[in-house]
Image (cartoon, rainbow, N blue to C red; front, side, top):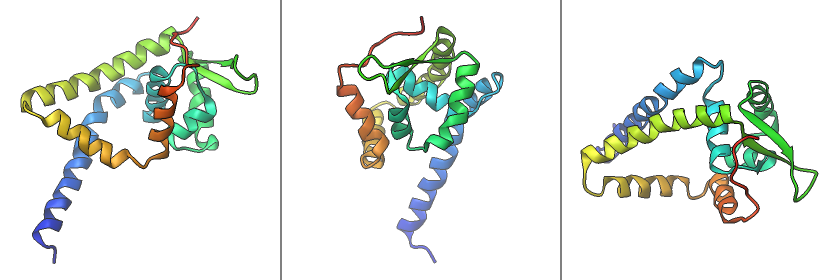
Length: 164
């Protein structure tokens, strides 16, 4: 038998599951039109945040293997959403950028989620956004992908550009 605290935490876990489903539902429906999935959305999202991210850096940020990313990256490239260039800092690396088409799709998808969060925080008022951020910080602080992303944001070699 669960005590009160365990039961409340189970309720939090259930809410987290349903909230995540709500958060991803609309973008999932939107990307379905393009024949891509949530993993493609994540790739587009992080390339948009870190233009010029290398393929290996992206693997680390998303915490997935090269094998798991091979097909989604190829599909995004073939559909004209991303492009890869030889890195100027080291020709052994490929840097990833969104094409104009990829930028437009990523903006459309992320706008839905930003507006969703903005509406929720506005309706709740107070310090809910800060509390939410604190919880997410704690949940993610030990993730290798988050640490890689923080390091990338500190680097100066990243170039802000969209397509060519």
